[in-house]
Image 1 (cartoon, rainbow, N blue to C red):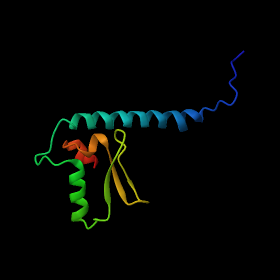
Image 2 (cartoon, rainbow, N blue to C red; image 1 turned 45 degrees about the vertical axis):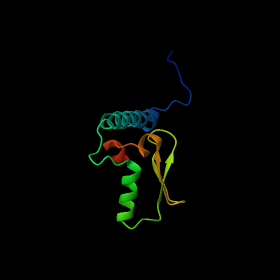
Image 3 (cartoon, rainbow, N blue to C red; image 1 turned 180 degrees about the horizontal axis):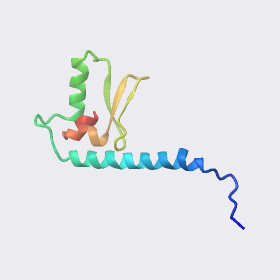
Image 4 (cartoon, helix red, strand yellow; image 1 turned 90 degrees about the vertical axis):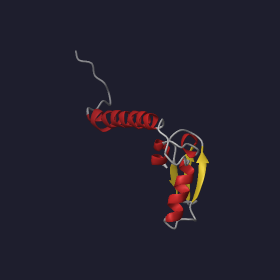
Length: 102
């Protein structure tokens, strides 16, 4: 007699497990690439927050503020407060990776 699993649907594999595996793979790739390029500093020794401020000012976006936020790779833009928040590992870093994220 075959084992019957109630509420089992084979499409679960397609719609949940495959996207979950792809997102885990992507997350690992982002972290390893960030770690690799964190070893290279930029030639002008500017921090990611300074570069972000320079880019914003040159594009007439002086009303956008740049703040530090806790966590690692939790960088984001908050449109409600018009703020770019850079994670601790990015904010004061002079690495090429941090500037790329910012």
